[in-house]
Length: 161
Image (cartoon, rainbow, N blue to C red):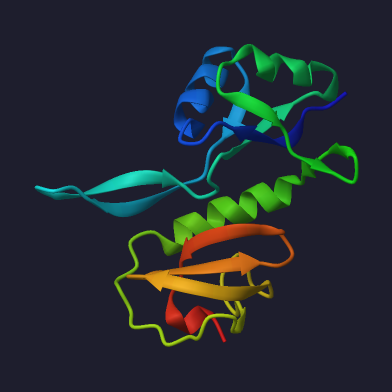
């Protein structure tokens, strides 16, 4: 059977370590990362932060899914309707394209109210609708309805309506 993308749930703040360990086992993973500015008491620094907290994607044949549990930090697979949730290749590519398109955008002044419904009108997630939760600098924090998960993304104000 052909390898399929699945979603792995990891322990909090263990996404990068789990991804590294899975890769060492020869498994194909995708951990979407975004650049964020972190404030320490003495400095600010840009760091790579997982787009989906406590989740990463793994491409593996169904009969080999148990291999993931050889790695410390893996909790379980994400399930949908009683079966492991499968992610289509085009959805993985949409996430990659979205991160590429939004990397390095300058800070913009966004004026949205909590609960506003926003439709992404441009880019790889064009047509997707989400509920605006809050903003931090140039990041709009949206609950993307069709994905059923919290998506944190840097988007240009011209991309949403």
